[in-house]
Length: 543
Image (cartoon, rainbow, N blue to C red):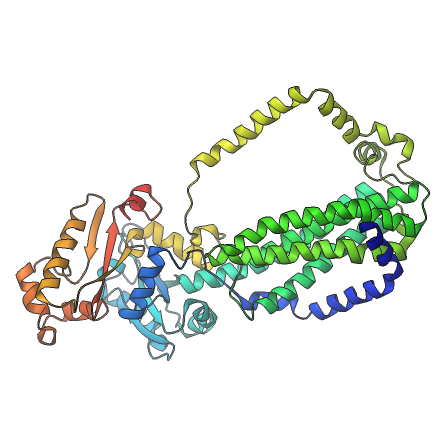
């Protein structure tokens, strides 16, 4: 079957190459737009308790998840010289921060602003920095597109430095960094691949052909990602997967095929026969290799986590495309190029030539690497050593692999945050600033969605909620609990019952402001602040 496939590729070579050229030409306008249809996030299963709690709070109490933090920092915070604006609670610091936000407050895309003047916990430990939470109406993915407008609306002030962070900024930075890494990977990988292929094949034509096939597979794959992103939600990390598999496997599979083709030519076979045998041997290996990889990646499609599902879909697609290119485009191209596959030979320096001969003589016989040396190559000799001393090779290699795998026993998995990004991007700078100068545990509370039988604000439910919160507060790992029954520590249970059973008569502005975003019908939100960091095992055990 595979032999006949090679014959078909030879017979219809111009048609096959033409169809691939059309596919690549059509793909080129769409491939650069792939990132525009991809989404950040998607690291949590919708079936997870945390995700269900968030969805419940969004639906019931209208919890806003689209929050951008604007951090104001006094330019001079040295001891004894606090700068011209003083501390964050000084009148000038407050005035300049309000001046910076003047054009943001009346922006139609903003639903509200929570300032550090409303919540003193938004002031840094050294009191020379503070942040405000800007609540956006759109979802985090859409809000990230509004960040340039936000930056233009923030007024520069003379004595405060402004840093922007939060979820939408993080998502925007992930997309920007992924695109930048993709361009850098292509810029570095393709030249290095060509250099490596030149060392192996010592022919410009033979070296460039696998790189072109890999590049074509990537272009078509990215265009298909753009199309697939129109009908389903795909993770931004699909960009990296597509480049990794498309270029890597495309070059790898093509290397096998070109090597075997040159070997058959060196044995004196004509071009048509060499192509057919190449597809029947190396092509068979490529097909089964690609199918094996695709089956493994296809398992990810059944995960409920969008990030994994996206990697599975994109991975299967690009692997199958790399295989298709290797068994159709490449054989057709080889039948057109024929014996010119060895054209433009590359002459290596004497030392490089000896090293290359040792490595490649068994891989790709050519005029520069005669068949007589086939049984004297490095890899040929290595294979004989392995077969002659299997146990002596197996034991040390097995021990080495076990030693390399031991650190995995202590691996800890968690959702990614801005710490995965380079230090020079805005969200990472804001993340580091919050971690260094603020109580970062305040920005990563444990959210509880509590539902009661009937309205939350009944005497019975208030009493049960009060006792529930007190039990949480008694845990030694808990620093604080924010809820409607712990908003003011001066209040007793009886006072909470009296106040909340008549909510329209609440005179305390703080309680009134706390109640509105925390309760709706039979649902209320509780925030638990741990004494330890978000990724600390004690915080995870607390959950």
